[in-house]
Image 1 (cartoon, rainbow, N blue to C red):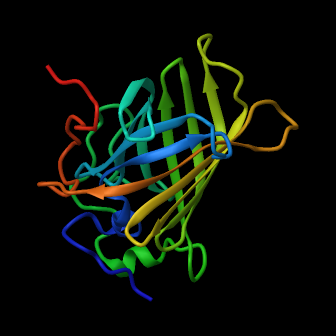
Image 2: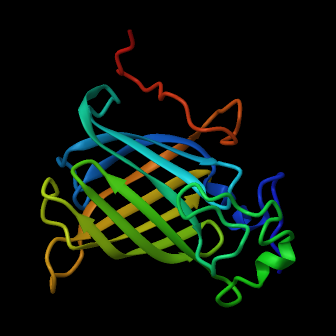
Length: 220
């Protein structure tokens, strides 16, 4: 079945198009049991004019009513379909890309499927504290599964060996879960999970994300 383009973004971003926009909501640390710490999160996923999406997540510890207590962490990175490099791809560094896209139609993009349902996906996510993750996985309709292939850590990072993340769109909400392996040979343990609502946006994710406006966040 051919991929339908929701608007004039690059064809190869169509399998990821349901992610684009601003999302806000709450979640819990650990396995999400009652009594575990609550956080409030905003996720901005924006198209850039290049064949990847820009990802940014800002998270605060919060009260159950959404009142923010203090910043918890921030993440940023880039998500794209996993494929071979073409002359239309930017880099390394600031080397410009060819003006003609590598994939110019939905039919071109269909060739990237691993099977009838899945596209391969890659994501890089960078954290405060000198840590970056390289993920590989699949996107299957409005569902994403990611597994960390490599973790780059500096002296400020804590004990963290690998991770799995899943995302899904259910009745217009984004459900996600993050499981972490802290040491080699251990099983993944629940780290955090959340449910986010799609926020109204003037640009619908077509421009870089703006400053979040969250309940309880002090503005000057």
